[in-house]
Length: 73
Picture 1 (spheres, rainbow, N blue to C red):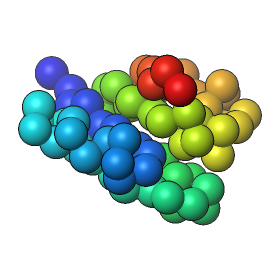
Picture 2: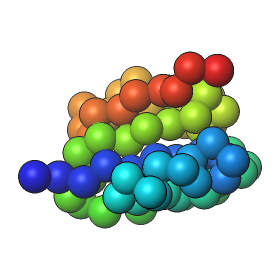
Picture 3: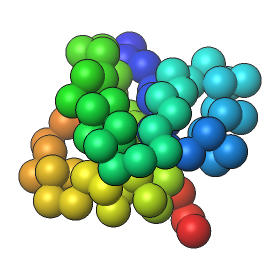
Picture 4: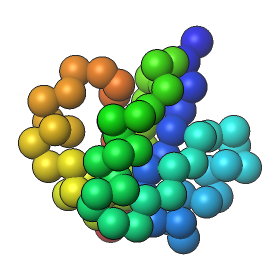
């Protein structure tokens, strides 16, 4: 079974760590893109903040894996 990761601003992703989610704090678009490129291979779901999803742009839509979900704003 794969793991879950969350990418985005610290205030929006920090709480996910309490549930065992890998939290990747990324405040700037470049940091979001770096976190996305360097996800561990066993991550099957990525939860993104709206800003993180915007930073990924077309890369998010083109990805077939991992599955991604965007938090409501």
